[in-house]
Image: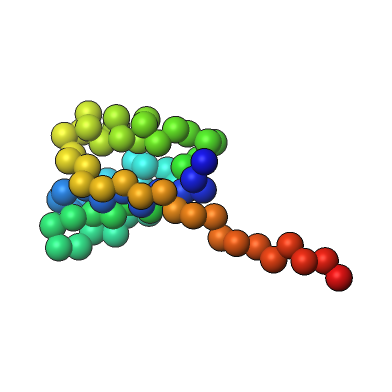
Length: 75
């Protein structure tokens, strides 16, 4: 399971509008908005995608964000 997601949608969403997606930070630019971050409470990505669809937003791309590697060496 991904630690977070990067979702690109068509259109520039305001920061206030982006606040409707807890855990995700919006970065609007060049006619697109990138929502990026971890979903709270293990919320499934399909809920977020469904919400975007219900709002009439076109999802252009969805990328899982890899976990940040941690150094597990002891010593």
